[in-house]
View 1: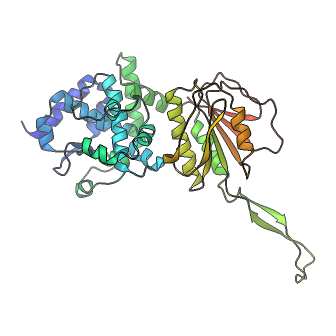
View 2: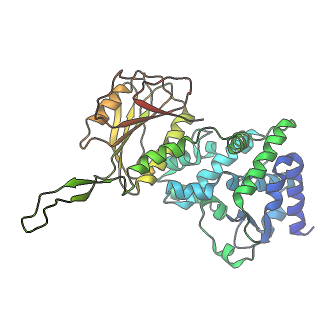
View 3: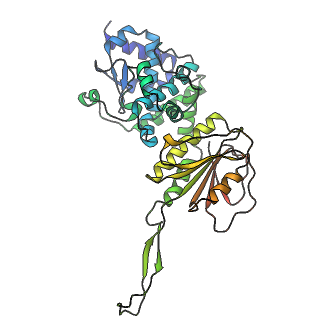
Length: 384
């Protein structure tokens, strides 16, 4: 059997078991490449395959690998790596593979024995790629020995490979339209009785039926501090004795650099998934600050950790006790200089001060539970 024909049969097997992924799987344009060891996909939906790997891999497992590679594109790993500013693309690829494979294996999708999983990495299952990446920091040599052939292509991190540059690929289409179509087919599959992997169900629902774009709201407020037109104002300066003009003109002066404090609820009521989400959002805020640090405060009923960070690899969270974020907010107000903005990430199960000082900075609460109330001096943003 020709190698390409076997790959097409594996694709047909994947489509037969998961028809809601047909559009995505058939959109992958196959090109043979002996540069890679297994399969790899570019960010523009071209799939490269090593003929030896295809010939040696069982049909069901090969179908699972095709779904794995497609999952990188559906999860947007190539863009998320850039947004997260991960400094090690190899470790990011490992983290992305673990997040995908954990999800696929829970849905009984067959994969080769040489696969990356959270259990094999010695970490907890069900975490985001960003959270896994942080836990793998400093383990590169060990991971290279464990997974010497890992390379899923630019679909995993956005960096174009040499074998991608040399190939001729189809004209790039509107990826957003394609992703919307796949999401609609996943939702239709659910209506027809299909049971897609947990991530696909959530991804399709959020993409087609979005709730509040809380991240956009948050970043809009953070970026307001970065906007030169917002960070400058006019004031009257001293009148020059050399100036014969009887008028005193105001002078444009810049405001101080943005100063953001982020308080993370690390009490026992915060689930692992919520803490992982907090790590992702802190990374997004850091990207918006464009090199400026933020103050991270880890708090349950006490301030457990506090310090300035400039990138996501410096994030440390500690806690596990009862909840009283008032102490974290008080710590933020004691910072010198005082923050322009305080962001509180919490499930909302905490006490709040009844009043807020008149000239104190704005407080935004990212709430994982929409039914929890906050005082009127807090701007709530519900995370769905």
